[in-house]
Length: 336
Ligand SMILES: *[C@@H]1O[C@H](CO)[C@@H](O)[C@H](O)[C@H]1NC(C)=O
Ligand SMILES: *[C@@H]1O[C@H](CO)[C@@H](O)[C@H](O)[C@H]1NC(C)=O
Ligand SMILES: *[C@@H]1O[C@H](CO)[C@@H](O)[C@H](O)[C@H]1NC(C)=O
Ligand SMILES: *[C@@H]1O[C@H](CO)[C@@H](O)[C@H](O)[C@H]1NC(C)=O
Image (tube, rainbow, N blue to C red; front, top):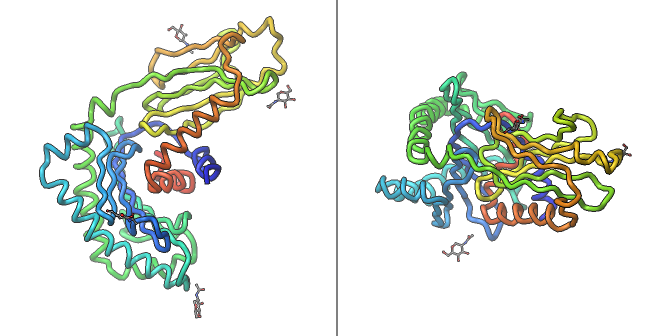
């Protein structure tokens, strides 16, 4: 299980942060320990709230707790949506799909992600709706044409089903257009300083064994608009360097690493190398000299960090994981 999560983490696709608000619906069948429907709300790709058909509601951060406090009625609205309205809507869709595939038993999972993304520079809002079935892309909504696009031929029949209700699609798109940009605006208003705050990472050099590459590892930074690279005599190196993906930490921050293959570096040349962490567009950087004295040689730290992330993510709920699967599978949504 852990290795699966690990794999998914490494698949996470990252790109510069634009502000986004997303709702992820996960409806399951055949999982005895999971509620039928789980809903996660993500602001800038970090879970802000969660609720499910089993009446669990949680809000993740003081900023969002205050939002609920300042908007009495919001909690009731969410509860009603989570416990009554949305489970019916999604359960019938899952049943229909299972029926179409002649799946009477086994575990099945249907996911929808809908939301909006705001480009800070152009101030343009982009809405999106994607649907996945059993972990694979299934359908997406073309908001301009007001049609569903089946990602795989097996989805064609379902597409026709969903499109039979033209008026329903129109209403849904109208709802998305009206609410999501406004909600995102509200989130940015309430969470502004929290969302825009920059967190610098702690950077360390790690090495498994004396012959393995030296890994420059930065963790705890936010936002994910950052780069890290190795330099020799102040010049960025492209050879003997392996860049890892930017991965999410459970606490909204990110981590990344860049490995330097040191096998051909003479000991006296070590001091000519350093690792630089930098936020995009920001002059400030964190420079770490390649130095035997500061390298942490162990098999614990990098693995420990990742296991920590894995455990954290597991706690966050299946939803987040599902999102990560999607980020990978459908680069055009999860990522931005
Ligand atoms: C639903 O919640 C109850 C307690 O409120 C708990 O005992 C039960 O295990 C939960 N079921 C699921 C599927 O999460
Ligand atoms: C489902 O079963 C029916 C009848 O047994 C069959 O005609 C149909 O092709 C099956 N559909 C799929 C997707 O396997
Ligand atoms: C490091 O480079 C050497 C040759 O310069 C190569 O043989 C070795 O496989 C590389 N190690 C890694 C982990 O890529
Ligand atoms: C890092 O910052 C220092 C001064 O703060 C500057 O001299 C150096 O050029 C910066 N490095 C990069 C790669 O921008």
